[in-house]
Image 1: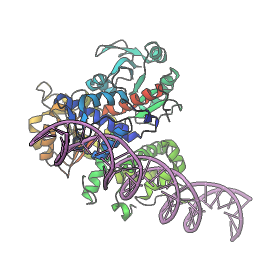
Image 2: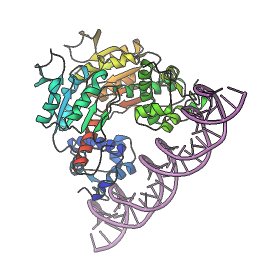
Image 3: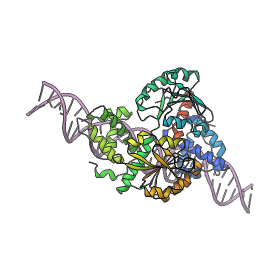
Length: 220
Length: 220
DNA sequence: TTGTGAATGTGAATTCATTCACAAATTCTA
DNA sequence: TAGAATTTGTGAATGAATTCACATTCACAA
């Protein structure tokens, strides 16, 4: 059971690690492991056992001393916390390179993120079938989002138009937006906006290699 | 000039923010701004001015008191730090949904990440032309990586085979790997491995919405 | 049923990151 | 040329996240 202290502020990094735990637990479930210790969980994610226990402790106490955590049950609990035990209605705006790839990305489906609508402004794409979903005209964005009870919108349009799209999305009452355009977008206070910056990790590697060459740094 | 105190350990978040500054500076450059203050830079990234100055101070002192930072010069300096003022030879392994989209992703090009080789194991894809690059047989992976002086490898293959690929990549002497497969990979101590977990941000939004419904949390 | 070993859950200690606050430097104005 | 207005750069202070360390709990074996 999720304890009431969950009202306390949870750090972003804890949530991100919860995602990691969830994934490892899925693997462990497939391996038919009944229980897992914080030590084992930590090892698989290159974290410390204390970190794992602390993270989980924010939400309740799921383990058994001397034994560890029940794999299936813990996965279910984390799923509950992250909202993965339910389906989310998602819309994709923009079906260029990235948008198109994401529509076909099975992992989203598996996690309960169901892409129900696809939008584009390209007349050649509108009306065409994309992995079983009809591409809608972006002109009808706000109305269609409302009519279809969309809860999360993914933005995969060129940077130049991303802000206009977001304004439209916000006007439709959407409270959660995932942005793939490499640009900073403005949203009202009550809207959650997350950015997926595809170049950032490459840049980190670039930085790491630079420092490696200059003899400043090692990988770990 | 980059000062010698750059030998101190730089935190991951500082590097990530450097990426953000770089992007903002590119925009400011296009807007023909000559200088920018830490205040303005902070505002654009929703950070504090102190944060911006502290981040930069790890690498040297680039600003002028009373005036701010010279846009072009600072961009150049950050580019130097992140290794963006040079070209990197990159290889893509796997041209499914994601791999294929990334090969066509202009932003990588712009930042100096040049995808020189593409690998797949699908006979129908091997030999075919993908955005001007011939798809190679994954059997020749290690040899081709060496022969073409590849420095960074992007993994976009199914989770089930990702570890085998990585082992092969490592055996070719590659020191920097970006992994898009939703799985934890093992690499030796001296290899930089970064993971791009496409579901993580969606899961964060999912968590945020859950808490919003339960009245626990606001967006900011 | 008792003892041993294992592993959790959590305050306290520590480490790490961010923000404060201000002297120093420089621009700008008149 | 002097005084006002900015804004940097950075130690010090604060705040946040991680790790430590251990009492507590439980499983399991004999």
